[in-house]
Image (cartoon, rainbow, N blue to C red; front, side, top):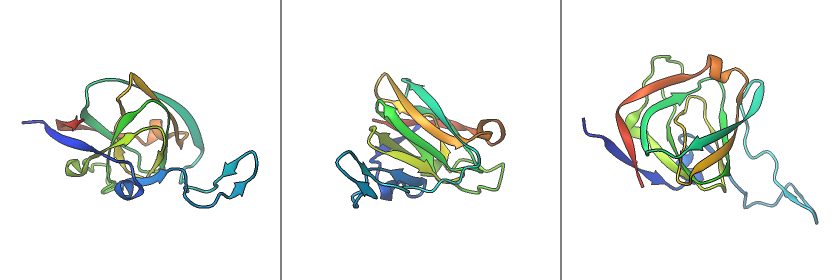
Length: 164
């Protein structure tokens, strides 16, 4: 089978809506503003039991998606800290079905330039970001037992190539 290609999309509220919410600097008035700071509170609600913050370093490699994973119980947050990367996602489908397949025809790839983070809906398929720099680092927020008890990984056959 010939490997299909997908193009990278800009990370906007509208483009990312099927997968979750974009966390970005609001254009609204800050919740608190003074000489020392501007603060915007409550940008996104999280549905995570026992949330934990983790640190993720992703390494440069070929831009080929051969797997996707999902977590059906919590939302998951990715906040870029360093580097630029491309983040592949697919919308949540058949979230309650443990045998659900990745909606391959709906996979999208978003450029994460460090200015915005994402909160993914429960069941959103995703894979490890592909750095365009030597590496990229993220703060990740998800449930304490998500990796051990709520990790669904599927192989993609044939794999998909991200078109730069």
